[in-house]
Structure formats: C-alpha cells, structure tokens
Length: 71
Figure 1 (cartoon, rainbow, N blue to C red):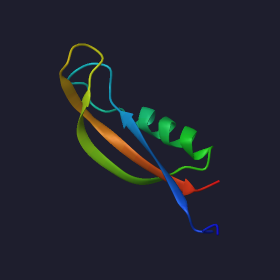
Figure 2 (figure 1 turned 60 degrees about the horizontal axis):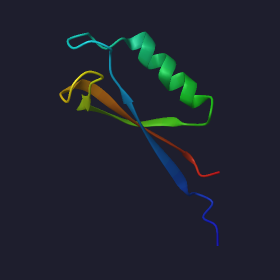
Figure 3 (figure 1 turned 90 degrees about the vertical axis):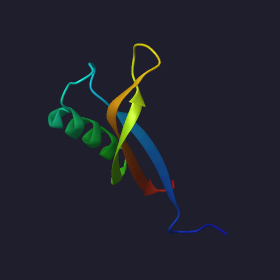
C-alpha cells in the first residue's frame, strides 16, 4: 500500500570557495531555485563545519535540507 503523503529528503552542502568568505545570498538563492525546479522545497538550514576543498580541515558552511513528495 502506497502512502500518498510519503516524502523524500535531500541534503545539500553549501559553502564558499575560500576560508573566511562571507556566504553569498545570490549564490544560495540560485542553488535553492535550481532544486525548486525539480520539486524540492527548503525544509531547514543548518550551520555546520563542512569539508573544504584543500586539506583535511573543515570550514563554516550550511547544510540545506530539502523535501518533496516521493515520486
């Protein structure tokens, strides 16, 4: 039996390219709008240390939790 209200979730990591950069709201908006085209809606934003591109250290970033009805 299929649940009509079943949801699926996706977590997207968002960070800037260099340590210390301020998060760019225009870039964040573009990421959210791109996922919205596929039916994803923002459920939560969580500040977190995310893996950087260089070395083992982490930098401040955001985890975007998205949800949509299961297809």
